[in-house]
Length: 170
Figure (cartoon, rainbow, N blue to C red):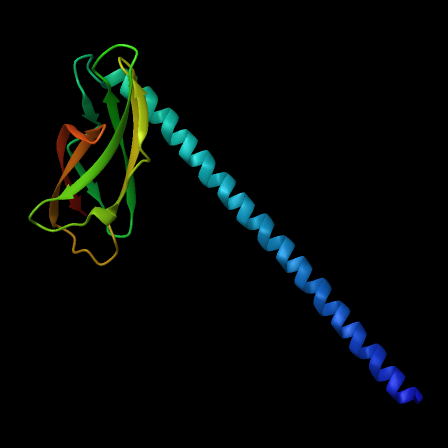
């Protein structure tokens, strides 16, 4: 092997090392960014749950099964808002029940996909639980339109209660 070939081999391996170092650096920066993003989302979720719990404890009546913090919600296309709901479990003391939230669009249109529904909840009899519900109106929905939805609560796979809401697009 002559000197020119050795020099070319060293340059090739130096380029490879530099590319690998840059790749690993970018990977580390990307992973750090993603981790930070998930920490922020987790913090927002926890803050929403605490706010929902506080609001429900203050505003939900002792005889109400299901409460929504409003009836009409004005939302711009492409934007979202958080609605706070409260569930109170009535039944035999000492029991726990599984509650699910479902949304049914009215005849005017709208879509169930506009809602980020909470996971099923296990609630003990006599307990109140606050839950956030996010409504996001997609871009391109014409301002001035109103859509009705029925928010249904299902307790152990049986209808429990429901509330109508109106989403107005600003």
